[in-house]
Length: 272
Length: 291
Image (cartoon, rainbow over all chains, first blue to last red; front, side):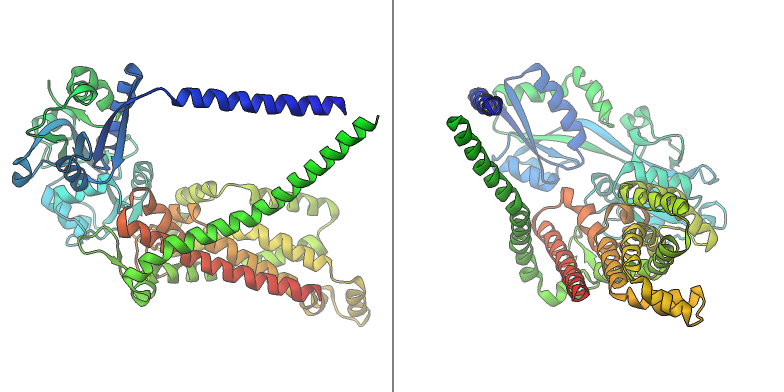
């Protein structure tokens, strides 16, 4: 019996000690850099902020995935330090905001390795996805129905693909899958399928097709020759310079040091 | 010695308290979940309108002009579950008969071992096997452009409900008094006649309970169907890509915002009401059984 009480009391002691240490930790003051915007940029900003926080342990970089439009609005209203947009700013937005391209996102169009089709134009791709072209024969392939594989409605890749091809809200999907891996798997197992995925996630189980004669690669994406791409943009206020850790983080994102992390996140760093 | 006794009495009281608290934890969770779903699920229904929400046939939550009709999801869940029951229940009941009446002790232990193993397989594994084997097979067998459709989902669900159907039916069949069967056999009925005309009718309510349990399992499954059903919000057709109530929530929740997010909570609320109804039915059957 004595033993049990001893154990109990030591457990209570341990609990009290543990509580003591957590409160002590919480007292450290931290500087914050807040980012807000594009859900497509989650990976890029995730890698960048993690790398940055590792070096500057007193700074916390936060990310609020609200979408490009909401992010731009947040900067305008001063609710965040840096806005994230996966599109270029419109002219009226440029009036009081600055855009800085931090990386480029290339979206690869993939088909089954058995498919003889190796090249499509952006227009053909759009027609395929909105259901105007439904047979591979119409684009130089076999006589077989085209099966359009896409991502779920909330996906950043889908948003990018649909906005570049001008098919937003019009796509007739056969399947809406929730991850890039599922898309690659499905396209690799269905000879009639066509899909899209971030360039970095494409494996050799599927065939990447060229768009208007250009294969996607870091080089063709950077030069702008590969059409299905969009910019990842950091948005800041025009009349208000960034200061302190926000400026420091911004500079880090634009430094050549950041290239490694941007590549890891599946995007192409811009030439510096 | 007296002091020790006092301590042990205190400890006893303390542990009693712990047991009671743990006992109410389950109730608390159910209450919290119910309250949470009702509170977060009703605003969107109010905003969209109950009939537009439940009977609207178009779901386009991220479109420029969003529309939030969940009839496709409801019908898909109902059809999918019904299909799974249609295939899974006969298979499961016959398997239960085999286990309880036909198989020798050794075979029965091997088979029931396999059945209980089946119930332990994570649903994502069922989904993966379905995605890699069933979907391409369905595509080739039926000559379809794509195999991810309601039919594939039904096949996967039918397999997934087997363990619950088998184990509950088996218990029900074993509980039938021996005298019933012996009387039937003594009157000259064959073994098969006895099974179908005496044993199964006598085990009726237990078997019914297993079916309801299977329905509950099928309608609540998300991961596996998400991987084989294609997830397009079409009105359900056997060979068309479809989206279930569960997958509607699961596939959009991570990045949703505003009314879309609230509408997803409402979808979850509808699913919850379904499951609540199924459980009520199950409880009624079990209660009737006891009498």
